[in-house]
Every structure is written in structure tokens, then in C-alpha cells.
Amino acid sequence: MGNLPELFVVIFALHAGQTVVAQTSIIGSIFANALLVLGLVIVVGATRAPDSCMRFGRKLANDTATLLLLCTFIIVLIALSLASSDPASHHVKGVSTIGAVCLLSVYVVWVIPYVRSEGGAMGESGHAPRVPLALSSALLATAGVASAFVSDWFIHALDPAIEQLGISQAFAGLVIVAIAGNAVENTTGLVLAWKRQSDLAISVVKNSVAQIAAFLYPVLVLISLTFAHTLTFALAPVYVGALALTGIAVWQVTGDGEASAFEGWALVATYVILAALTLYE
Amino acid sequence: MAALTTRERIALAVVVAFTTLAGIARYANAKPVLAFALATIALAGLAYVVSFATEQRWATCPSCSS
Image 1: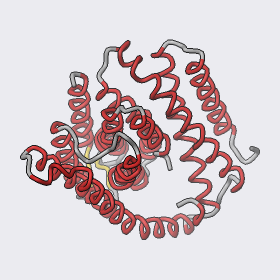
Image 2 (image 1 turned 90 degrees about the vertical axis):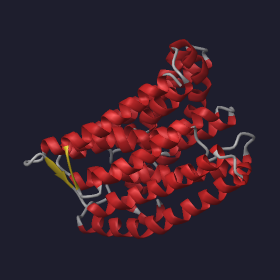
Image 3 (image 1 turned 90 degrees about the horizontal axis):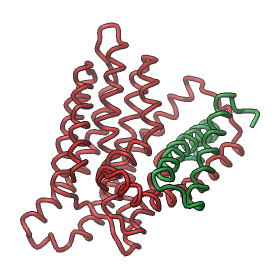
């Protein structure tokens, strides 16, 4: 639910015909979480660890890498089809729709047992609810409605602000929207890493990556079918390459259940290079 | 509101303030960069409120929030 404002931003961007902003916002969130935030969390976690090595469960790290790679597979396949102008390249919308349904199905199959096991673990650790259901429901409803309004204002101000600041639409979507939309995960992950709660810190960040790649993106692809400007898995070649390499880098860095500070810095550096590129897009 | 800590109440007040300012900037035709900055901060704050409320709902009633 932390991605609700982002969902509205993309919907309003598509409604306003700003497809570049919509697409870069989503993949920007994947890059921001998988490279920048994960990198910083690893740097903080490794620095705070007694032996300068952050250790965490391998299962979640590998599961989320699998979901990210599945999303990347669809994107790379469509990009190859478009680049080679094969017959399937005329049916990107159809292939994206089928890909979205497949991604969502796999995500649901993964997330249900995961939430159940996390719920059990939370119950055992004795985290008692503090806020009454009525108040939390009212907060959720109010913040949800407010998010929809603010997303509309955000998109309204985007074009003139971009013009005044002299930045590209890709930079706005990939960096500004992505970092603002994921501010909660960013802060929470870093605080948890600082408190040496490595498993939880990695879980917050990597769950967010999985949720955007395997849930939010396909849901938006399906929702956009009702709009004049549809969202598909067809991306600019530079982002396709960046996404594929991000999937591999994340799997390589976190797959063994431990990471040192330099690996975190490597992820951060990757993000900075990518952000610099989008300035000139 | 008594169930919230002082820090949470302050955070909520800040989010409400930025959301209101973003709305004013939108309808008062403020400078685009200012309106954009206020909306960006308000969005980040609202993401926090949504996450917090979801977490609390889930702790109270796991079947209500999935």
C-alpha cells in the first residue's frame, strides 16, 4: 500500500498522455529501490556489523531476484521483438497483457504463503496493535484520497517545472518521482540497517522491488487498457539493458545472503551513472 | 488520536500542512517549481501515512489489509 501514491501518479500521467513519465516512474522505482536504496542499506548495514559484513536470509533475496528477472524477461523479449521487427512486434499490447497476467499470477502464488509466514512470525514476536482499527482505516482512506488529488497536482505542475528547471522528462520520472514515491522504504530500510536489523531492512527494500516489478507494473498495464494512452512492457533500449543488468547485479550481490560495504557502493554508483544518463535523454 | 505518539502526530501535522500547501499552490497558480516541489514532498508524506495506516490495520486485523 506504500506504493499507492505512485499508482495514482502513473494513472494521472497516462491520463495526461505523459507516457514517458509514467514508464520512467515505474522502472525508476525499481532502479531507485534495487540500486540506490538497497546499496545504501548494505553500506549502512555492513558498516554497523561487527565484521563489516551484512548478513541476511537468502530466501527472500533470491525470491525477489526471481520476480525481478521474470519481469525483465518479458521486457527484454518485447524489446528484442521490436528491434528485429518480427511479426510479434505488431502485438506489443497483447503480449504485454498476457505478460502482466502471468506476472500477477506468479506474484500472488509467491506472496500469499510469504504473508502468512510473516504474519505468524509477527504474532510470535508479540507486536501488539497500537492504533484502533477505526482510526487506522480512517487514516488509510483519507491518505488514499489525498494521494489521488496530490498526484493530479503533481502531474499538472510537472511539465512547466521541467521546463523551468531544464531537466528531462526521463530524469523527472526516473529520479524525482521514484525517490519521492519510495521515500518511506528508503528511510525505513536505512533506519533498520542502522539498528542492525539486517533481515528486516533487506526485506523492506527487496519486497518493494518485487511489489513494483511483479505487482504494480502489471496492474498498471492492465488498468491502462481502459485509457487512450496504454502502458506496455516496451521500453527504450537503454532502460531494457539497465534493467537486465540491475536484475543480475541484485541477484549477484544479495543471493549469497551477505554483502560488504563495497558491494553497496557498487549498487549506488550504478544508480548514479544511470541517473546521469537520464539527464541527457 | 490518543493512540498516536507525539512523533506520529507531528508527522501527520507536517503531511497535512504540505498537502494543504500543495493544494493552495495548485489553485493559486503558484510558480510551477514551487507547486511541483510541494506536491513531491506531500506525496512522500502521504506514502508514509498510507504505509503506517496499512501496518497498523494489519496488526489489528491481518485479514483486512492484504
